[in-house]
Image (cartoon, rainbow, N blue to C red):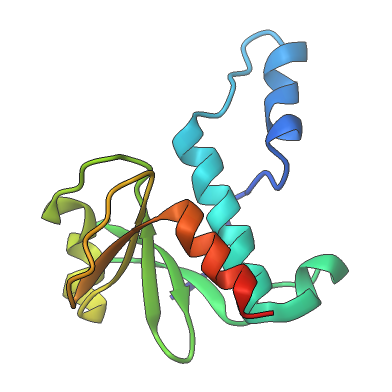
Length: 135
């Protein structure tokens, strides 16, 4: 497990500003914005108000395998894994690292749903709504 070293734009408007004002800068794709939104939702859920105090994550990490694979979100100490794939149709390839290293987890998508044990596939919007219900 490693601390999040990715830069996540919290606000999609701010994430798009560099592309509008700097030649050569590009607008982030929807998949990256969805990954950022999920990171912030999970961070707020497991770390409380740490994000509002510009605190560092103490429980939210990502996991990189020795083969170069990655699991987007890992909540410790429970070892809860989740992967963001902002697509409507999923394959087992997209959750391979999560299954191999953690036995399964959540695959958060744009619209796909599959509620089977092991890898549970749910839309990212539903997942964020469910996290918001716990407060």
